[in-house]
Amino acid sequence: MNEIAVVIIDKQAFFRSGVRQALSEQAGFQVLEGAPNDEALDIIEAESPDVVLLDINFPALSGLELGRKIARRYPNSKVVMLSPNSNDDELFEVIKTGAVAYLNKNTTTEELVNVIKRACHGEYPINDSLITRPAVAEHVLRQFRDIVSAGKVMETVTAPLTYRETQILNYIAQGNSNKQIAHILEISEQTIKNHVSSILRKLNANDRAHAVALAMRNGWIPAEAKA
Image (cartoon, rainbow, N blue to C red):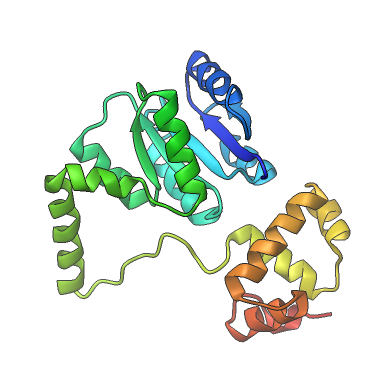
């Protein structure tokens, strides 16, 4: 079984180290940590983690906004939002970011490990929170009804392809190999392979050429990109 790659982004170095230590003692985890600054997205871009543990309270950068960006740009990296004082209002805002889970920072290692594993299996542990908090569930349903009744178009959490995947598909259309694309973008060839696998899965494509054809047909990359 492959290791679960986890990135911890929190303003407190002590907390990051504690979580890293706790997860490192569990079998099957690869753990990295980072501070909540402009480089946070760069870490996720470079490492393509399975799960991002994200501090909701940043001094200068909104954890909610960063979580929203991660969910949209890197849908394969599942966001678990961590809060020192979890409450109904905050849970409602977290749901709108596309995060898969919302935990109190005082949670046990056992619960954290369980949530991470569930997220990697495609589950949404955040749904459990709605079962125990009916007021939040009603709030979510009420806003959905308001959006529908007003005729507004709901903004999707994830696009068919992320910006990076579209960028890579453009380079593929131009005839570049994974190695060449990795050199151009200055990231590892393995990361390129991971992105290509994600592209093929999302587009239900048989191979790279098929993916390019589908993307061109849907207007996600320009037809003139082909070499």
